[in-house]
Image (cartoon, rainbow, N blue to C red; front, side):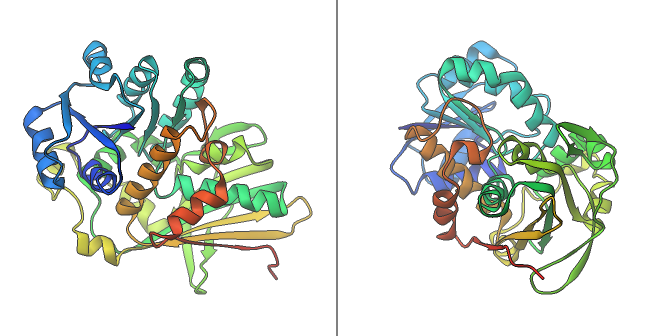
Length: 348
């Protein structure tokens, strides 16, 4: 089983490589700079791993670098503008593909552009294999099996602690600032619409705290309607976080910041992702996911997904997580890494 990590020298990529090194898989690292790729391999302690140099802009070199891979994990953000080239190269070499993107419009473009090509090539493409999209999408499937169909679903992300974002995350914010400002897409009875005001302005967390929220382009808005019968889906985050993201750090300053949060900061972080669903009769159902360390959880999610894809667990095409994997089985695997999930179908 050969798993190739593209953009291998980045902050998130090194966490993915560290997680992969704990499994019995062959590794290949691909990046645009040989010295940085070598440094990443040394930092993770996998100096014997195969290493290649290629950029997303050079299709011929990229195809050569990815050839022979069972799965390609793309960690080279921002994905907007470059991710499609890596998807295309993975399909051309017959490799399954996933990435760690959190960029909503990029995710939608992969569904719109590559569904036919991936199915024809017999490979699975799974964009946005991260801490939020995969667990929340899987939990939405379980909610639907117990209480669907739904009139609407609101997805809320609330994160506390964790230090500052990585440089890659900050660059992704810059690349998608227009979508951030508009609140992202909402799913509205068969259509994705932009500029709609969020229907929910507060969310009550499991501990009883009420948090002000505002619309933000969450990836689950794109994936959930592909397998859950629902009329309306929106994504929200803390209003304070949206306000902070609306004041992005200039490109020239990002490089001078730390590569990403320290391990101590990541271990102190807590995240809560809430799915509030209402059926056509107005009966509410809630699913809750909680965990620590968004970057570390993303690494675990990406590796678990890659190993399952390599084992042939999913059908070909561009898929939402719940279309690719057994929801309960995948969530149970994540529970061994500090992630918990609950469903309440009997809300007052």
